[in-house]
Image 1: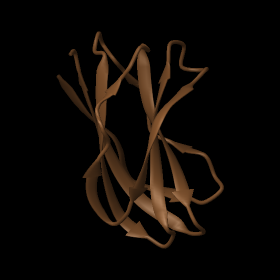
Image 2: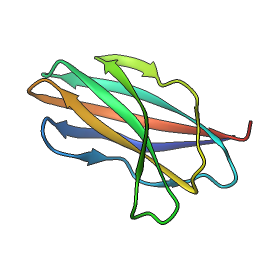
Image 3: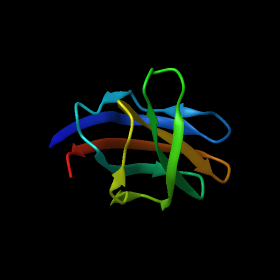
Amino acid sequence: MAFTNVSNKQVVVNGTNQFSAAIPMNGGNTCKAGITVFANTATSLTVNIQGSNDLQNWTDGTADTGFVVGYAATANRTIAFAYVRLSYIVVGTGTIIVAADLNISQQ
């Protein structure tokens, strides 16, 4: 299992596409994200684990919604791609400051 910090106090603004760094799956097929919201002037944060084989064309997975101030994790997601990243979407008007990590494993 590989644990990677993908963003640390990243500012996410409503209406602007924000993404974490891309992380190689390194033979893993399952991924889970840990999300810490430090500040929130919006309604909530939606996080989507995206997959890619070429680092250019990204496919959305199932979105996890309702992240507010504090820590929460996404569900385990089966990944059939060579790389993953997180897509952040602010719900409501405002700004969210977020840190995130990915746990990648072979299941």
